Length: 194
Image (tube, rainbow, N blue to C red):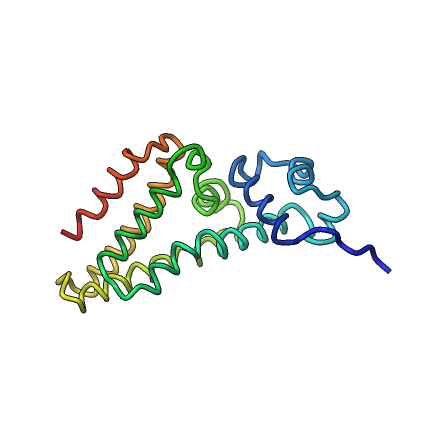
């Protein structure tokens, strides 16, 4: 009979996601993970498999907890333009200060792993598609509310533009997590809706 695991899976995934977010996949060793997660190597391998499998689980955890919180607020809103504005304001708030220097695990992963790892690329691409669709639905609401007068093709292009700008804001925050700088980026992004 195996030993009972004496840790909370979500808590250790949160710690692993934070470590991968801070250091990236390649710079994070198994020893770094064992130390930060507070579990032994055997438990890591028994529970998650190898480092790659743990990374994929941490990516899922990050997406389901942090990233989906921002997206679900956009998806569940009944507002149009203001829901997009609220999304970007929340993004600016989350990326300001010391925490912002670490960027977003999803965006960091795009830069580091997309070309080298198909499983990771598929997960991140699916996430970006969900974000694009959330922006698109918000833009359709804005159109129905009379806030915009654009073709469906223009709305799709705008949704893709907002995904790109949100990702760019996360990258910019790594270099300068100054809230006023990030708000300038968000305001300029949103100016296309005026």
